[in-house]
Length: 104
Image: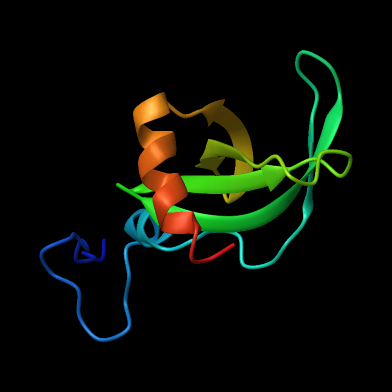
C-alpha cells in the first residue's frame, strides 16, 4: 500500500491546493448565468456577481422584471454544484452591500 501525504492548510507546496479551501476563498461562479429556484414557487434570477465574504460564497441576484432590486444570498456548494441558497442576516447584507457598491 502506497502512503500519500495529506495536504492541509499549513502545508501547501508548489501548485497543489486543497480544493475545499480553494472554493471557499475564491468565487465559484465566474460568469453571469440564470438560476432557477423552485421553492416556494418557481422563479428565475440572474447572477450578477459572486464574491467570497468570511469564507462564504455570496451571490448577488436580480429578477429580470425588477431590474433595480438586488438580492444577496449565501450559496451552498456541494460536489461542485449549487446545492442551495439561503438569505443573509440584515447585518451581513449591510456589510456586503458596502463591498458591492464599487463592483456592481
